[in-house]
Length: 242
Figure 1 (cartoon, rainbow, N blue to C red):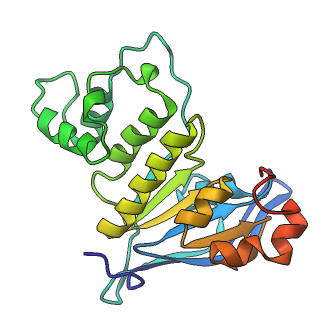
Figure 2 (cartoon, rainbow, N blue to C red):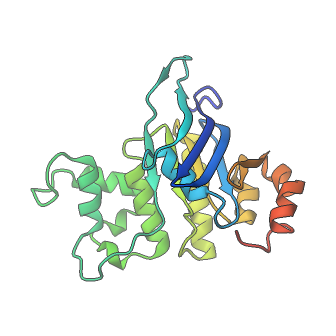
């Protein structure tokens, strides 16, 4: 059961400087379990840098703290769904191989004792029929469903999604957002997503962060999309892609 707002990930004064360039400064926000927070911004605003900092891929200043339901603090477990990675079309790696490697200590080429477990993982996202498909054969929507299964096994406290709409058509994108909506309501986790689909965010996001090296605006989708900061950066709603 999700106790919305009781487990909290707090990002306080996060900054990133690489070389002589300040990529992020003073980024502060909170993420509640059971909620989807979207990060929007123009190209170069620091969206990908923010995700990389949270994932520990690049050094940063500031603090990231996770507070459990009982008020104690502890390490933050994260799941990550990247944009679709380039795959060698000759690679034989299958969906089963990827999923089995993520849930087992044993090499995927050993006897398939984890097949039922992998099938159950995929079924949660309507992707069980993909189990024998090669990764390089998957469509954009199929790839995202498989990666969601991997990223949420086991269920993390924070699920990070980097522009999941890449390569997905409108119908597939709605299915994806419906799965995310179901996930945040039934699993005890927070979702942080970089996206530029303002229409879908208006419908599915609980909070929006407008980023331009620092947080320029935050609030509900309606509050952020009607803000002066949004108008300054995008000039309107829905017709300009970051």
